[in-house]
Image (tube, rainbow, N blue to C red; front, side, top):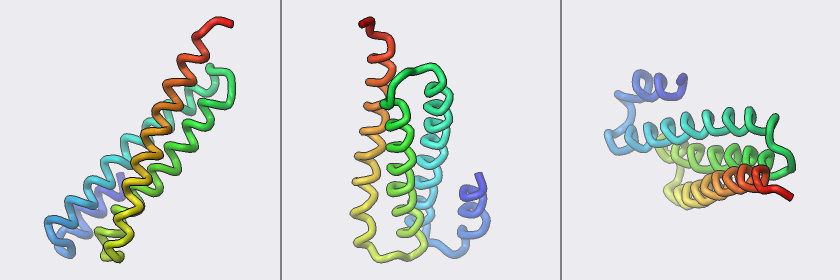
Length: 110
């Protein structure tokens, strides 16, 4: 919430429209995946095994890399840092797949 407000009010006059869009993308992914971490944390109380916890950590790492790289790019970091965002995105995907697997394995008898 604070990062979105900062972008909308504190950075609007300082960033180009393109870089403000990059900032907003980072905020959106950060927000949705923070909710995902909350969901996974709640699910961890009900799902046995290490997979759900691993899924949570993958979402934390992926969000940090993906959104962090975009925040940094928007603020003027070297463009080469943009190569980190796809790695973060891949980790996010792995986190969601791991979470889905933890739900499937928890519901599979035996």
